Image (cartoon, each protein chain N blue to C red):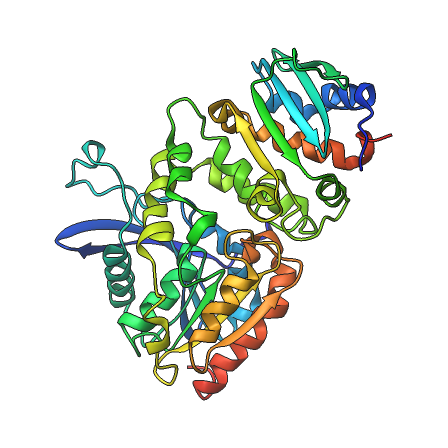
Length: 290
Length: 126
């Protein structure tokens, strides 16, 4: 009999600001719901290793969705989206995640996101305290700053620069010691993103997200905050991640040695060493499996 | 300071399957500065025809990548330290720079990135 993955895929319809979206998601496991947010211009495949890891799925119900316009979550049928420049806004991003949690009837889920998803972990803790029992921000910072300047964004969607530029640059964000097969896979996923989506997602990642003045307002007794930063991530550097953690009373921070910007998919075995203590902490705070 | 084996590197690049795929249809003159030492890579239709190490002011170029000599030492290590894993992070964090025709540089960034891999694999220096 052929080996079968425990991952199950499905679609859920939900609405944000009166627009209906058909959203693809994959899930595996049972226990505390853990919503997994992919990076800019990528999709939920980045979490595939976690979804097949019984050490994790034995206590957590993992949900890896594709944001609208990403992966299998196609643009909304009702909109003339081809006449508008795609831009991910913080307001939409937050509403979408809340609607997703409601549509899937998740009870005080935990959240983990990477890169722009990491930034969103912090925005959720600020704007919706207690909605998520814990947030894990991978490669999260107070703001992106000079490593993703808006002048760079135009090159991700330039008519005379092919879609090959994006995966090549993403390849450079990973640790050289991460397994090559996985680094190539990360790049391959990036090669499949619509060209307009990368620059549009960076509107949130590089411009809108700025918690310089608000990070300190987070109440970690309502939403626990965990921040993990990869040693080789040249955008969300360890210094950037640590500076964010230092602003938040009660936040947990670890630098992940030998990892870069995509820890969960560039080297899942190494990432697991850093993730398991965090998940155990969430379990303890939740008084055991849900 | 790394000193390029210009003929060995030219052969290694032309024999590298990934570089050849990424450099398809590429014709350019790439200036690489290792400290004070310039090299011009003459690339025609995806093939490195020559790497000039006796560069003069009369040698034109389209794209420039430059970094300090000790930075290239770090960048060409098999397991480079953080932000030396590629030229782009070295530009952001370690004083490297790019210049010239950025449109061509970004269009052929997969080839440029691979070129550094090939240099790092021991084919670059004498």
